[in-house]
Image 1: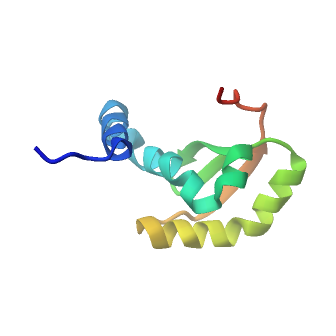
Image 2: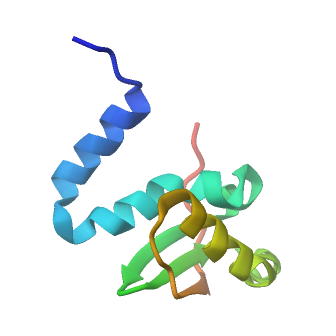
Length: 101
C-alpha cells in the first residue's frame, strides 16, 4: 500500500462527505491559502459558491479593499492552478473566525 500525504487523504474524505454538490466549493476552500497566500488567507475565507460566483468573508474593510484590488489576479491564479472557472468573487465583511490555538 502506497502512503499518501495526510492533506490528500483529508481532502478526499471531505469530498466524500460533502458529495458532488459541494465538490467545487471544497476544492476552492482547500486551495484558498495557496491561491491568495498565507497573510490574506488568515484574514479571509470562502463562504459559498453560487454557480461561478464565489462569496468570501473578510475580516474588515481594509483587507476587503486589498482583495478587491487583487480579484482579477485571484481568479486567474485559481483558473491556472485548478483549471476551473470563477466568473466573479464577492467580498463580504464577516465576523472573525476562531483563531487556531
